Length: 427
Image 1 (cartoon, rainbow, N blue to C red):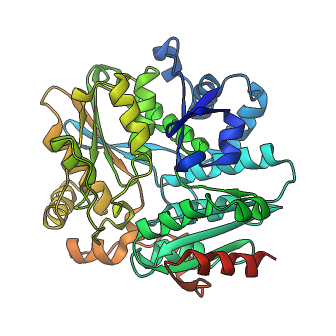
Image 2: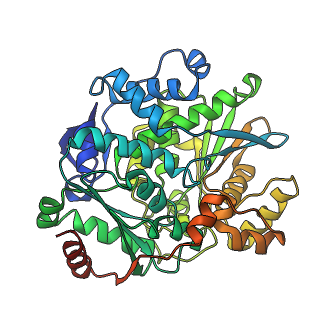
């Protein structure tokens, strides 16, 4: 598999190099130079999830990984279910929160951990990542107590839910967490600055576990095929998928799936009031505003890292821009939609509600709709209970985390402070 740096097309790397490098020169993200269609999609959709996912990833990655090695990696990484639930007459919810940290990022985090373990072969590596909510927990649990790996997680203090925070700030060991005064974009900027620092990269063996990393992105392609596999065959002809979008990695994975043969007609990348992309789609002007806090905090992103990948597919015509939608959903409307979905006996947290709203606004009457539930409602227990005026159950894994002490250290959004803290911690 050959990938190119979208900011420097002279930098072309293999899948292994892209995974180990994380971010390319000039803070560019890597993307495949060629996306070839899969053969016999109908037969592929008949396979079990792990076997199908192995074939998809083997097709994307090529011969860099032996098929049996990749099969073992996928089996260990994807050892939990994906569930497609019918919510109303024409719409289904793809539940991606049945993994160990109750969020869709378990797929990418666990597959990346498998890749790093294989490719680094005992070399020291430091995973530096920013989180707007769920990445931190998924990455922390995927790499917890792995030999020769340290994980440094930055999160915006007070701007993610307590349940999200406690899932990763209570682990200790090789997981090092910093509560940054500022927004997720501030945290993300610190990560990017570290990748420009040759001293830090050399001493720490730096890598990133944000959806910057291509291994995470490719892993996410697999569950879109599982959604279609679980959909009744007679409803697969016209499918519209709506993805709650913050950093735009998840919808990018859906787009990759479509390019290689996933029978999805149209895509909606639905955002909260952090509406950089919807405004860009409408006006052609890229003008990020200051990040605004919302109920759907994992999407509180004004400068999405994965947009260059999406843009490249739209510009190249690999994905028809007329079949790509992006709209923003207000805080008030998010709460109204949560209540509307609850009337159908389905509990949706804010991100899921936003995806549902995008679907209902963008989808035509003939299409079957699939909207994504990217996190368990209990990760947003307080806001869900307040909006719906009803109590929801707390899964044991969340309750156990909530009962533990937070081990994160406070930090301002200052790169030199981050650098000093990491060096003091790891040396």
